Amino acid sequence: MSGAKRRTNESDDGSHAADEQHYSSLNPMADPAAHDPTAEMGEFEDMWEDEEEENVIEEQEQHHGGNMMETDDGDDDEDGMALQQDEDEDEDDNRLPEVYLPGAPLEEGEVLEVDNSAYDMLHMVNVEWPCLSFDIIEQPIAEGASLKFPLTAYAIAGTQAERQPRDRQDPNKLVLLKMAQLRRTIRDDEEEEADIDDADSDTEDDPVLDSRTIPHDGVVNRLRVAPQHNNIVCTWSSNRKVHIWNVATQLSSFDSAVDPEALAAPVAPLFTFSRHTDEGYSIDWSPLVAGRMVSGDCDRNIFLWNPLPSGTWKVEDKPFRGHTASVEDLQWSPAEQTVLASCSVDRTVKIWDTRNKGTAALSINAHNSDVNVISWSRLVQYLIVSGDDEGGFKIWDLRSPAQPAAEFKWHTQAITSVEWHPSDESVLAVAGADDQVTLWDLSVERDNAQAVEEIQSVPAQLLFIHQGQQELREVHWHKQHPGVLMSTAGSGINVFKTISV
Image (cartoon, rainbow, N blue to C red; front, side):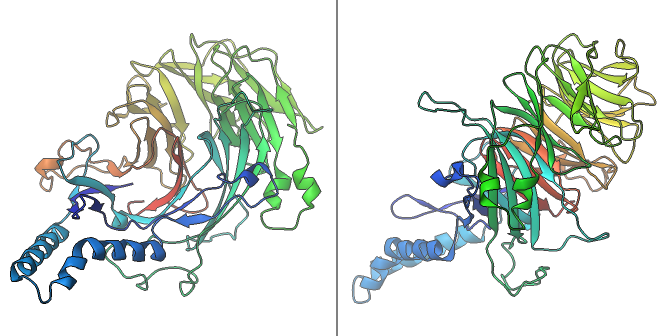
Protein backbone atom coordinates (compact mmCIF):
# COMPACT_ATOMS: atom_id res chain seq x y z
CA MET A 1 0.00 0.00 0.00
CA SER A 2 1.05 3.58 -0.33
CA GLY A 3 2.76 4.16 2.98
CA ALA A 4 3.60 6.73 5.57
CA LYS A 5 5.82 6.33 8.60
CA ARG A 6 4.77 7.36 12.08
CA ARG A 7 6.15 6.97 15.57
CA THR A 8 4.20 4.47 17.60
CA ASN A 9 2.84 4.89 21.10
CA GLU A 10 4.25 2.41 23.60
CA SER A 11 2.01 1.11 26.36
CA ASP A 12 3.32 0.17 29.79
CA ASP A 13 3.96 -3.39 28.64
CA GLY A 14 6.00 -2.23 25.65
CA SER A 15 3.40 -3.03 23.01
CA HIS A 16 2.68 -0.70 20.09
CA ALA A 17 -0.80 0.71 19.42
CA ALA A 18 -1.07 1.38 15.70
CA ASP A 19 -3.84 3.29 13.94
CA GLU A 20 -6.74 1.39 12.37
CA GLN A 21 -6.18 0.46 8.72
CA HIS A 22 -9.29 0.58 6.54
CA TYR A 23 -9.14 -2.33 4.17
CA SER A 24 -10.74 -5.73 4.22
CA SER A 25 -9.38 -9.21 3.67
CA LEU A 26 -10.88 -12.48 2.62
CA ASN A 27 -9.69 -16.06 2.74
CA PRO A 28 -11.22 -18.29 0.09
CA MET A 29 -9.38 -21.50 0.88
CA ALA A 30 -8.67 -21.69 4.59
CA ASP A 31 -11.45 -24.20 5.23
CA PRO A 32 -11.39 -27.93 4.40
CA ALA A 33 -14.54 -27.29 2.36
CA ALA A 34 -12.31 -25.44 -0.08
CA HIS A 35 -11.59 -28.71 -1.84
CA ASP A 36 -15.31 -29.08 -2.62
CA PRO A 37 -16.10 -26.96 -5.72
CA THR A 38 -19.72 -26.61 -4.56
CA ALA A 39 -18.85 -25.28 -1.09
CA GLU A 40 -18.77 -21.71 0.16
CA MET A 41 -15.13 -20.73 -0.14
CA GLY A 42 -14.96 -18.07 2.56
CA GLU A 43 -15.95 -14.47 3.07
CA PHE A 44 -14.41 -11.06 3.49
CA GLU A 45 -13.00 -10.72 6.96
CA ASP A 46 -12.49 -7.23 8.33
CA MET A 47 -9.20 -7.40 10.17
CA TRP A 48 -10.18 -4.46 12.36
CA GLU A 49 -13.90 -4.94 13.05
CA ASP A 50 -15.73 -2.91 15.67
CA GLU A 51 -15.71 -5.81 18.12
CA GLU A 52 -11.93 -6.05 17.93
CA GLU A 53 -11.64 -2.30 18.22
CA GLU A 54 -13.60 -2.39 21.46
CA ASN A 55 -11.25 -5.05 22.80
CA VAL A 56 -8.26 -2.85 21.97
CA ILE A 57 -9.87 0.08 23.77
CA GLU A 58 -10.59 -2.03 26.83
CA GLU A 59 -7.04 -3.35 26.85
CA GLN A 60 -5.61 0.15 26.61
CA GLU A 61 -7.77 1.25 29.52
CA GLN A 62 -6.34 -1.56 31.60
CA HIS A 63 -2.77 -0.58 30.74
CA HIS A 64 -3.09 3.21 30.78
CA GLY A 65 -6.26 4.14 32.61
CA GLY A 66 -6.63 1.55 35.33
CA ASN A 67 -4.16 3.07 37.75
CA MET A 68 -5.47 6.55 37.08
CA MET A 69 -8.96 5.58 38.12
CA GLU A 70 -7.69 4.03 41.31
CA THR A 71 -5.68 7.10 42.38
CA ASP A 72 -8.55 9.54 42.89
CA ASP A 73 -7.73 9.65 46.59
CA GLY A 74 -4.11 8.61 46.27
CA ASP A 75 -0.76 10.25 45.66
CA ASP A 76 -0.90 13.47 43.59
CA ASP A 77 2.48 12.58 42.08
CA GLU A 78 0.99 9.52 40.43
CA ASP A 79 -1.78 11.69 38.95
CA GLY A 80 0.85 14.07 37.61
CA MET A 81 2.88 11.30 36.03
CA ALA A 82 -0.21 9.85 34.36
CA LEU A 83 -1.22 13.28 33.06
CA GLN A 84 2.27 13.92 31.67
CA GLN A 85 2.23 10.49 29.99
CA ASP A 86 -1.09 11.33 28.31
CA GLU A 87 0.27 14.68 27.12
CA ASP A 88 3.36 13.00 25.64
CA GLU A 89 1.18 10.48 23.84
CA ASP A 90 -1.04 13.28 22.49
CA GLU A 91 2.05 14.96 21.05
CA ASP A 92 3.02 11.71 19.31
CA ASP A 93 -0.52 11.29 17.98
CA ASN A 94 -0.52 14.81 16.55
CA ARG A 95 2.82 14.38 14.79
CA LEU A 96 2.24 14.38 11.04
CA PRO A 97 3.27 11.19 9.22
CA GLU A 98 6.11 11.38 6.73
CA VAL A 99 5.98 10.03 3.20
CA TYR A 100 7.97 6.79 2.97
CA LEU A 101 10.02 5.85 -0.08
CA PRO A 102 10.97 2.18 -0.58
CA GLY A 103 14.42 1.32 0.70
CA ALA A 104 14.58 4.11 3.27
CA PRO A 105 15.55 2.84 6.75
CA LEU A 106 13.10 3.12 9.62
CA GLU A 107 14.27 4.77 12.81
CA GLU A 108 13.67 3.22 16.20
CA GLY A 109 10.01 3.48 17.14
CA GLU A 110 8.82 4.04 13.55
CA VAL A 111 6.40 1.75 11.75
CA LEU A 112 4.85 1.79 8.29
CA GLU A 113 1.12 2.43 8.00
CA VAL A 114 -1.14 2.32 4.98
CA ASP A 115 -2.13 5.82 3.86
CA ASN A 116 -5.87 5.38 3.39
CA SER A 117 -6.21 8.83 1.84
CA ALA A 118 -4.26 7.53 -1.18
CA TYR A 119 -6.85 4.86 -2.05
CA ASP A 120 -10.39 4.96 -3.34
CA MET A 121 -10.60 1.21 -2.65
CA LEU A 122 -8.36 -1.46 -1.12
CA HIS A 123 -9.19 -5.12 -0.44
CA MET A 124 -7.08 -8.23 0.15
CA VAL A 125 -7.67 -11.86 -0.80
CA ASN A 126 -5.88 -14.46 1.32
CA VAL A 127 -5.33 -17.78 -0.45
CA GLU A 128 -4.26 -21.23 0.64
CA TRP A 129 -1.42 -21.35 -1.89
CA PRO A 130 0.36 -18.52 -3.73
CA CYS A 131 -0.82 -17.81 -7.27
CA LEU A 132 1.89 -17.09 -9.83
CA SER A 133 -0.62 -15.95 -12.43
CA PHE A 134 -4.21 -14.76 -12.76
CA ASP A 135 -6.50 -12.97 -15.15
CA ILE A 136 -9.59 -10.80 -14.79
CA ILE A 137 -12.82 -12.21 -16.19
CA GLU A 138 -14.89 -9.52 -17.87
CA GLN A 139 -18.66 -9.75 -17.61
CA PRO A 140 -21.35 -8.17 -19.83
CA ILE A 141 -22.20 -4.67 -18.61
CA ALA A 142 -24.31 -1.82 -19.91
CA GLU A 143 -22.60 0.22 -22.61
CA GLY A 144 -21.17 3.43 -21.22
CA ALA A 145 -21.45 2.26 -17.61
CA SER A 146 -19.22 4.25 -15.25
CA LEU A 147 -17.38 3.28 -12.10
CA LYS A 148 -19.88 3.09 -9.26
CA PHE A 149 -19.34 1.60 -5.81
CA PRO A 150 -19.90 -1.04 -4.59
CA LEU A 151 -18.14 -3.02 -7.31
CA THR A 152 -18.27 -6.66 -8.34
CA ALA A 153 -15.23 -8.29 -9.93
CA TYR A 154 -14.53 -11.76 -11.30
CA ALA A 155 -11.11 -13.38 -11.72
CA ILE A 156 -9.40 -16.73 -12.16
CA ALA A 157 -6.02 -17.66 -10.68
CA GLY A 158 -3.72 -20.69 -10.73
CA THR A 159 -1.92 -22.00 -7.67
CA GLN A 160 1.71 -22.79 -6.90
CA ALA A 161 1.12 -25.57 -4.37
CA GLU A 162 3.79 -27.80 -2.88
CA ARG A 163 2.83 -31.45 -3.07
CA GLN A 164 3.27 -33.31 0.22
CA PRO A 165 3.99 -37.06 0.55
CA ARG A 166 0.52 -37.58 2.04
CA ASP A 167 -1.22 -35.96 -0.94
CA ARG A 168 -3.03 -38.52 -3.07
CA GLN A 169 -3.33 -36.08 -5.95
CA ASP A 170 -1.72 -32.87 -7.10
CA PRO A 171 -2.96 -30.07 -4.78
CA ASN A 172 -2.78 -27.43 -7.52
CA LYS A 173 -5.99 -25.95 -8.84
CA LEU A 174 -7.63 -23.19 -10.80
CA VAL A 175 -9.55 -20.84 -8.52
CA LEU A 176 -12.45 -18.78 -9.88
CA LEU A 177 -13.36 -15.78 -7.72
CA LYS A 178 -16.39 -13.55 -7.50
CA MET A 179 -15.77 -10.54 -5.26
CA ALA A 180 -18.92 -8.55 -4.53
CA GLN A 181 -19.78 -5.48 -2.44
CA LEU A 182 -16.30 -4.02 -2.95
CA ARG A 183 -16.79 -0.67 -1.27
CA ARG A 184 -14.93 2.57 -1.28
CA THR A 185 -12.18 2.82 1.33
CA ILE A 186 -13.02 4.94 4.35
CA ARG A 187 -10.17 7.38 4.72
CA ASP A 188 -8.54 8.38 7.97
CA ASP A 189 -9.65 12.00 7.64
CA GLU A 190 -13.35 11.42 7.05
CA GLU A 191 -16.30 9.98 8.90
CA GLU A 192 -17.91 6.79 7.66
CA GLU A 193 -21.08 8.70 6.78
CA ALA A 194 -19.23 11.35 4.75
CA ASP A 195 -19.85 11.85 1.05
CA ILE A 196 -19.31 8.29 -0.10
CA ASP A 197 -20.17 7.70 -3.74
CA ASP A 198 -21.77 4.32 -3.18
CA ALA A 199 -24.88 3.37 -5.09
CA ASP A 200 -26.43 2.22 -1.81
CA SER A 201 -24.32 4.01 0.78
CA ASP A 202 -27.05 3.67 3.39
CA THR A 203 -26.36 -0.05 3.67
CA GLU A 204 -23.43 -1.57 5.53
CA ASP A 205 -23.11 -4.88 3.70
CA ASP A 206 -19.69 -6.48 4.07
CA PRO A 207 -17.71 -7.48 0.99
CA VAL A 208 -18.56 -11.01 -0.12
CA LEU A 209 -16.33 -13.67 -1.67
CA ASP A 210 -17.56 -16.68 -3.61
CA SER A 211 -15.23 -19.11 -5.37
CA ARG A 212 -15.00 -22.35 -7.33
CA THR A 213 -12.03 -24.66 -7.87
CA ILE A 214 -10.90 -26.99 -10.65
CA PRO A 215 -8.05 -29.48 -10.05
CA HIS A 216 -4.95 -28.76 -12.15
CA ASP A 217 -2.07 -31.11 -12.85
CA GLY A 218 1.09 -29.20 -11.98
CA VAL A 219 1.87 -25.64 -10.91
CA VAL A 220 0.08 -23.02 -13.01
CA ASN A 221 3.01 -21.04 -14.46
CA ARG A 222 0.83 -18.72 -16.53
CA LEU A 223 -2.89 -18.25 -17.09
CA ARG A 224 -4.82 -16.18 -19.62
CA VAL A 225 -8.54 -15.76 -20.41
CA ALA A 226 -9.55 -15.58 -24.07
CA PRO A 227 -10.63 -11.97 -24.77
CA GLN A 228 -13.55 -12.96 -27.00
CA HIS A 229 -14.88 -15.77 -24.75
CA ASN A 230 -14.62 -15.24 -21.00
CA ASN A 231 -15.23 -18.92 -20.27
CA ILE A 232 -12.17 -20.14 -22.23
CA VAL A 233 -8.92 -20.20 -20.25
CA CYS A 234 -5.40 -21.29 -21.21
CA THR A 235 -2.87 -22.50 -18.62
CA TRP A 236 0.84 -23.29 -18.82
CA SER A 237 1.64 -26.19 -16.47
CA SER A 238 4.98 -26.93 -14.84
CA ASN A 239 4.72 -30.45 -16.29
CA ARG A 240 5.46 -29.08 -19.82
CA LYS A 241 1.83 -29.14 -20.97
CA VAL A 242 -0.42 -26.31 -22.12
CA HIS A 243 -4.14 -26.77 -21.42
CA ILE A 244 -7.30 -25.03 -22.61
CA TRP A 245 -10.29 -25.14 -20.26
CA ASN A 246 -13.99 -24.33 -20.48
CA VAL A 247 -15.04 -22.85 -17.12
CA ALA A 248 -18.58 -21.88 -18.21
CA THR A 249 -20.32 -24.08 -15.62
CA GLN A 250 -18.27 -22.75 -12.72
CA LEU A 251 -18.58 -19.16 -13.90
CA SER A 252 -22.35 -19.26 -14.42
CA SER A 253 -22.87 -20.87 -11.00
CA PHE A 254 -21.92 -17.58 -9.31
CA ASP A 255 -25.07 -15.82 -10.52
CA SER A 256 -27.57 -18.53 -11.45
CA ALA A 257 -28.71 -21.94 -10.29
CA VAL A 258 -26.53 -24.79 -11.51
CA ASP A 259 -27.05 -28.51 -11.01
CA PRO A 260 -24.81 -29.43 -8.02
CA GLU A 261 -23.84 -32.67 -9.73
CA ALA A 262 -22.69 -30.78 -12.81
CA LEU A 263 -20.65 -28.42 -10.65
CA ALA A 264 -19.06 -31.27 -8.70
CA ALA A 265 -18.26 -33.36 -11.79
CA PRO A 266 -14.57 -33.73 -12.72
CA VAL A 267 -13.41 -31.15 -15.25
CA ALA A 268 -11.04 -32.18 -18.02
CA PRO A 269 -9.25 -29.75 -20.34
CA LEU A 270 -10.85 -29.07 -23.71
CA PHE A 271 -7.46 -29.47 -25.32
CA THR A 272 -3.91 -30.29 -24.21
CA PHE A 273 -0.68 -29.67 -26.12
CA SER A 274 2.26 -31.86 -25.06
CA ARG A 275 4.95 -31.17 -27.70
CA HIS A 276 6.81 -28.47 -25.80
CA THR A 277 10.25 -29.85 -24.88
CA ASP A 278 10.45 -27.84 -21.65
CA GLU A 279 8.08 -25.98 -19.36
CA GLY A 280 7.29 -22.35 -20.09
CA TYR A 281 5.72 -19.12 -18.86
CA SER A 282 4.53 -17.35 -22.00
CA ILE A 283 1.10 -17.55 -23.63
CA ASP A 284 -1.12 -14.96 -25.29
CA TRP A 285 -4.50 -14.94 -27.05
CA SER A 286 -4.96 -12.93 -30.22
CA PRO A 287 -7.20 -9.89 -29.65
CA LEU A 288 -8.17 -9.92 -33.35
CA VAL A 289 -8.73 -13.59 -34.24
CA ALA A 290 -10.92 -15.49 -31.78
CA GLY A 291 -9.25 -18.66 -30.52
CA ARG A 292 -5.82 -17.99 -32.02
CA MET A 293 -2.94 -18.06 -29.55
CA VAL A 294 0.78 -18.66 -29.08
CA SER A 295 2.79 -20.45 -26.39
CA GLY A 296 6.52 -20.20 -25.69
CA ASP A 297 8.82 -22.38 -23.59
CA CYS A 298 12.19 -22.35 -21.84
CA ASP A 299 13.69 -24.29 -24.77
CA ARG A 300 13.37 -21.26 -27.12
CA ASN A 301 10.29 -22.53 -29.00
CA ILE A 302 7.15 -20.54 -29.87
CA PHE A 303 4.15 -22.50 -31.18
CA LEU A 304 1.18 -21.03 -33.05
CA TRP A 305 -2.30 -22.36 -32.25
CA ASN A 306 -5.24 -21.99 -34.65
CA PRO A 307 -8.85 -22.82 -33.75
CA LEU A 308 -10.80 -25.39 -35.72
CA PRO A 309 -14.55 -25.36 -36.47
CA SER A 310 -14.88 -28.54 -34.40
CA GLY A 311 -14.07 -26.60 -31.23
CA THR A 312 -10.53 -27.88 -30.88
CA TRP A 313 -7.13 -26.49 -31.97
CA LYS A 314 -4.45 -27.21 -34.54
CA VAL A 315 -0.95 -26.44 -33.27
CA GLU A 316 1.44 -25.90 -36.15
CA ASP A 317 4.29 -28.38 -36.36
CA LYS A 318 7.04 -25.88 -37.03
CA PRO A 319 7.77 -23.48 -34.14
CA PHE A 320 9.15 -19.96 -34.39
CA ARG A 321 12.90 -20.24 -33.79
CA GLY A 322 15.21 -17.28 -33.34
CA HIS A 323 15.76 -16.77 -29.63
CA THR A 324 18.90 -18.30 -28.14
CA ALA A 325 17.46 -18.69 -24.63
CA SER A 326 14.13 -19.09 -22.81
CA VAL A 327 11.09 -17.27 -24.22
CA GLU A 328 9.68 -15.32 -21.27
CA ASP A 329 6.63 -13.45 -22.60
CA LEU A 330 4.47 -13.07 -25.73
CA GLN A 331 2.16 -10.32 -26.97
CA TRP A 332 0.00 -10.14 -30.09
CA SER A 333 -0.17 -6.93 -32.10
CA PRO A 334 -3.38 -5.00 -31.41
CA ALA A 335 -3.61 -4.00 -35.09
CA GLU A 336 -2.22 -6.79 -37.31
CA GLN A 337 -3.57 -10.33 -37.21
CA THR A 338 -0.30 -12.02 -38.18
CA VAL A 339 2.14 -10.02 -36.02
CA LEU A 340 3.32 -10.77 -32.48
CA ALA A 341 6.16 -9.86 -30.12
CA SER A 342 8.33 -12.01 -27.87
CA CYS A 343 11.00 -11.39 -25.24
CA SER A 344 13.71 -13.66 -23.93
CA VAL A 345 16.49 -14.42 -21.50
CA ASP A 346 18.76 -13.68 -24.49
CA ARG A 347 18.03 -9.98 -23.72
CA THR A 348 16.13 -9.29 -26.93
CA VAL A 349 12.62 -8.30 -27.95
CA LYS A 350 11.60 -9.74 -31.32
CA ILE A 351 8.72 -8.99 -33.69
CA TRP A 352 7.40 -11.92 -35.74
CA ASP A 353 5.10 -12.42 -38.72
CA THR A 354 3.27 -15.75 -38.53
CA ARG A 355 3.82 -16.19 -42.28
CA ASN A 356 7.58 -16.46 -41.72
CA LYS A 357 8.54 -18.52 -38.68
CA GLY A 358 12.19 -18.91 -39.60
CA THR A 359 13.31 -15.33 -39.05
CA ALA A 360 12.09 -12.50 -36.84
CA ALA A 361 10.92 -9.42 -38.72
CA LEU A 362 12.68 -7.23 -36.14
CA SER A 363 15.12 -7.99 -33.32
CA ILE A 364 15.91 -5.38 -30.64
CA ASN A 365 18.86 -5.73 -28.26
CA ALA A 366 16.64 -4.40 -25.53
CA HIS A 367 18.35 -4.83 -22.15
CA ASN A 368 21.59 -5.78 -20.43
CA SER A 369 19.88 -8.65 -18.60
CA ASP A 370 17.01 -11.10 -19.09
CA VAL A 371 13.88 -9.52 -20.57
CA ASN A 372 11.12 -10.91 -18.36
CA VAL A 373 7.93 -9.25 -19.58
CA ILE A 374 6.45 -7.13 -22.37
CA SER A 375 3.16 -5.33 -23.00
CA TRP A 376 1.95 -4.00 -26.37
CA SER A 377 -0.13 -0.84 -26.10
CA ARG A 378 -3.69 -1.27 -27.36
CA LEU A 379 -4.09 2.50 -27.76
CA VAL A 380 -0.77 3.55 -29.32
CA GLN A 381 -0.10 0.60 -31.56
CA TYR A 382 3.59 1.25 -32.14
CA LEU A 383 4.54 1.28 -28.42
CA ILE A 384 5.83 -1.71 -26.44
CA VAL A 385 7.08 -1.68 -22.84
CA SER A 386 9.65 -4.26 -21.70
CA GLY A 387 10.89 -5.07 -18.19
CA ASP A 388 14.20 -6.69 -17.26
CA ASP A 389 15.80 -8.78 -14.54
CA GLU A 390 17.62 -5.83 -12.95
CA GLY A 391 14.57 -3.67 -12.24
CA GLY A 392 14.57 -1.50 -15.34
CA PHE A 393 11.85 -1.02 -17.94
CA LYS A 394 11.93 0.64 -21.34
CA ILE A 395 9.43 2.05 -23.81
CA TRP A 396 10.01 1.12 -27.46
CA ASP A 397 8.67 2.99 -30.48
CA LEU A 398 8.59 0.39 -33.26
CA ARG A 399 8.87 3.14 -35.87
CA SER A 400 12.40 3.91 -34.63
CA PRO A 401 13.56 0.98 -32.47
CA ALA A 402 17.30 1.70 -32.47
CA GLN A 403 17.00 3.40 -29.07
CA PRO A 404 14.29 3.25 -26.40
CA ALA A 405 11.85 6.15 -26.41
CA ALA A 406 12.11 6.21 -22.61
CA GLU A 407 13.69 4.12 -19.86
CA PHE A 408 13.33 4.01 -16.09
CA LYS A 409 15.29 2.35 -13.29
CA TRP A 410 13.21 2.73 -10.13
CA HIS A 411 12.68 -0.86 -9.03
CA THR A 412 15.62 -2.51 -7.27
CA GLN A 413 14.82 -6.10 -8.28
CA ALA A 414 13.47 -7.93 -11.32
CA ILE A 415 10.41 -6.59 -13.13
CA THR A 416 7.76 -9.33 -12.98
CA SER A 417 4.81 -7.71 -14.78
CA VAL A 418 4.01 -4.69 -16.97
CA GLU A 419 0.68 -3.61 -18.45
CA TRP A 420 -0.56 -0.54 -20.28
CA HIS A 421 -3.71 1.16 -19.00
CA PRO A 422 -6.67 0.02 -21.16
CA SER A 423 -8.08 3.53 -21.70
CA ASP A 424 -5.28 6.02 -20.91
CA GLU A 425 -2.51 5.80 -23.50
CA SER A 426 0.25 7.29 -21.34
CA VAL A 427 -0.32 5.29 -18.13
CA LEU A 428 1.08 1.88 -17.24
CA ALA A 429 1.45 -0.41 -14.21
CA VAL A 430 4.70 -2.16 -13.27
CA ALA A 431 5.25 -4.90 -10.67
CA GLY A 432 8.64 -5.90 -9.28
CA ALA A 433 10.26 -8.54 -7.11
CA ASP A 434 11.08 -5.67 -4.72
CA ASP A 435 7.42 -5.87 -3.61
CA GLN A 436 6.29 -2.68 -5.35
CA VAL A 437 3.49 -2.07 -7.81
CA THR A 438 4.19 1.29 -9.41
CA LEU A 439 1.92 3.41 -11.60
CA TRP A 440 3.47 5.69 -14.22
CA ASP A 441 2.25 8.51 -16.47
CA LEU A 442 4.69 9.01 -19.31
CA SER A 443 3.12 12.34 -20.28
CA VAL A 444 4.25 14.03 -17.05
CA GLU A 445 7.31 16.28 -16.96
CA ARG A 446 8.94 17.68 -13.83
CA ASP A 447 8.41 21.37 -13.12
CA ASN A 448 11.83 22.35 -11.79
CA ALA A 449 10.45 25.47 -10.19
CA GLN A 450 8.16 23.38 -8.03
CA ALA A 451 10.47 20.41 -7.46
CA VAL A 452 11.13 19.59 -3.85
CA GLU A 453 14.75 18.88 -3.02
CA GLU A 454 14.02 15.76 -1.01
CA ILE A 455 12.23 14.03 -3.90
CA GLN A 456 14.56 14.90 -6.76
CA SER A 457 15.41 11.20 -6.95
CA VAL A 458 11.76 10.32 -7.68
CA PRO A 459 10.93 10.33 -11.41
CA ALA A 460 8.30 12.89 -12.32
CA GLN A 461 6.39 10.19 -14.20
CA LEU A 462 6.00 8.00 -11.10
CA LEU A 463 2.41 8.49 -9.91
CA PHE A 464 1.97 5.92 -7.17
CA ILE A 465 3.73 3.17 -5.19
CA HIS A 466 1.59 0.31 -3.88
CA GLN A 467 3.23 -1.87 -1.22
CA GLY A 468 2.25 -4.45 1.38
CA GLN A 469 2.49 -7.62 -0.71
CA GLN A 470 5.43 -10.02 -0.69
CA GLU A 471 6.82 -11.81 -3.77
CA LEU A 472 4.81 -9.89 -6.36
CA ARG A 473 4.12 -11.72 -9.62
CA GLU A 474 1.50 -10.04 -11.82
CA VAL A 475 -0.62 -6.91 -12.02
CA HIS A 476 -3.61 -6.32 -14.32
CA TRP A 477 -5.98 -3.41 -14.96
CA HIS A 478 -9.71 -4.09 -14.83
CA LYS A 479 -10.95 -2.96 -18.24
CA GLN A 480 -14.57 -2.54 -17.09
CA HIS A 481 -13.84 -0.68 -13.84
CA PRO A 482 -11.64 2.32 -14.79
CA GLY A 483 -8.56 2.64 -12.61
CA VAL A 484 -9.11 -0.62 -10.68
CA LEU A 485 -6.16 -3.01 -10.49
CA MET A 486 -5.55 -6.51 -9.19
CA SER A 487 -2.13 -7.86 -8.21
CA THR A 488 -1.04 -11.32 -7.13
CA ALA A 489 1.87 -12.20 -4.85
CA GLY A 490 3.11 -14.92 -2.56
CA SER A 491 1.15 -13.24 0.23
CA GLY A 492 -2.18 -13.11 -1.64
CA ILE A 493 -4.17 -10.96 -4.05
CA ASN A 494 -4.95 -7.24 -3.75
CA VAL A 495 -7.85 -5.41 -5.42
CA PHE A 496 -7.42 -1.65 -5.33
CA LYS A 497 -7.99 1.73 -6.91
CA THR A 498 -5.73 4.68 -6.19
CA ILE A 499 -6.62 8.36 -6.20
CA SER A 500 -3.89 8.90 -8.82
CA VAL A 501 -5.53 7.03 -11.71
